[in-house]
Length: 233
Image 1 (cartoon, one colour):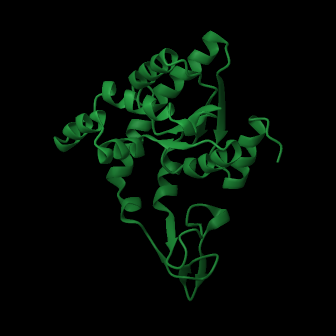
Image 2 (cartoon, one colour; image 1 turned 90 degrees about the vertical axis):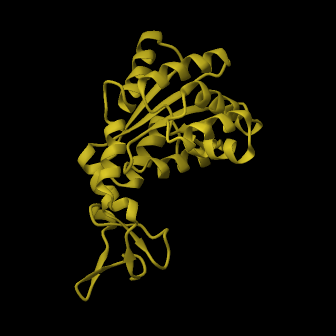
Image 3 (tube, helix red, strand yellow; image 1 turned 90 degrees about the horizontal axis):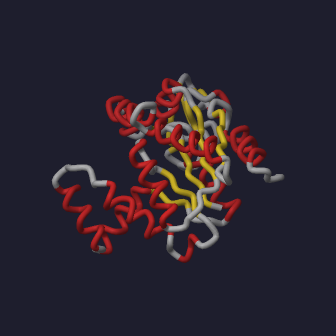
């Protein structure tokens, strides 16, 4: 099962990706991790990528895509893979599609979590971390996991512990910059999603598109995902 997974920051994509990884026993591959591994191991592609990164430049697609293909050909991907974080724009989508064909790697599913931009931003900025356990979910903008109130102060809804925020969750400029790329339907990530949607319609082949409404809670979204994949709980 080979899957491309799309969703804006704040959509819960990581959580749903973990569910897919567990269901299909396939690696969850993130483009950023691929970069770090190639650079740390000193591969030829990693050395080339590092040169661009050190200069503050974007790594060209003719370096990025071979890195990704090399990863998808590793033994642990024999049963399939879940690729997350790439492509980020429509040109990368075209090049990745061509590269997968040339490598004889079929794409089975494109999964998109659909979430309105303001709600995605609110969910990022509303995240609160429990000082006792980061796995205790708290978010001031999600009704099901809103923090509890004790002595007029929000506390962890699970254990009553103190809550804190991550600095990057409160960086509106950085959030807006990432979302500007994702929600761009002309050249950005949503344009890449639409490329694969058009491909699925025109070729009428094995590629399936799954859209998920990202507004409900985690359980509702995961139930919808498994249902659309034909998986019985």
